[in-house]
Amino acid sequence: MTELEDKIAQAQAEIERATNIVILTGAGISAESGVPTFRGEEGLWQNYRPEELATPEAFWNDPKLVWEWYDWRRNAVKDAKPNPGHYALAELEHYVQKITLITQNIDGLHQMAGSHDVLEMHGNLWQIKCTKCGEIEQSYEVPLAELPPKCKKCGEIGRPNVVWFGEMIDMAVIDAALQAIEQCQVMLIVGTSGVVEPAASMGLVAKQTDKTVIEINLEETPSAGLYDIVIREKSGEVLPLLFTSNKTLS
Ligand code: APR
Image (cartoon, rainbow, N blue to C red):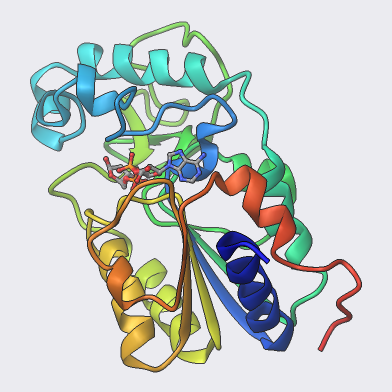
């Protein structure tokens, strides 16, 4: 048995035994769907400066410019389809009593693959939030007819319903995530560089409460040394192997 086969067998056994599993995903799980990540060679932050596009200051300084970038990202993602990694996580819901999927991604691919109750920590690219009345519109219009788009309810400027640098994440989402980690036996961390808080600390929280943490990520991450199983392979190739479909609901 190769080292990889041994790790996959170990991960399968941990998943087999678990009744509650928490999954945290990042941009890497969508890379095989053609969605650019942030920090790899092809990453978005190689060509754009987050301070100029992904902050409230940047938005109010030039709403049209920031919307041009998000319109470009919506166009880049509009034809993306879930990959076997997304589908494997959606399938896992049928074999494990409780799955909590926390994602940093805003592309909506987990929901498209069939995952339920996805905790979107950083919002959703397909939602426009009114900067005045807070109305949220689900919009798949690409390209947007008007930049910046206007609220259909009150006519004020809409913003992408995403969390920018310097903004707080919805505390209800963080509480739900931490509660799920407290109640799980196994945590899967997939496709995230583990550098942006609070997601970056969630694996540590799991280890501090003696959970089994399995990381699937192509590159090294700051906390990998604390995790139980670390698999440096593509998530779209590994996730479908992580559970044998003859598992019955435990
Ligand atoms: N399979 C597994 N891992 C992969 C794959 C793949 N096919 N492709 C890339 N990766 C890994 C990369 O090695 C990298 O470590 O996915 C990770 C993606 O890291 P980032 O690009 O930093 O994305 P993420 O961790 O999700 O960023 C967190 O930062 O910019 C903010 O809001 C943004 O949600 C984002 C947050």
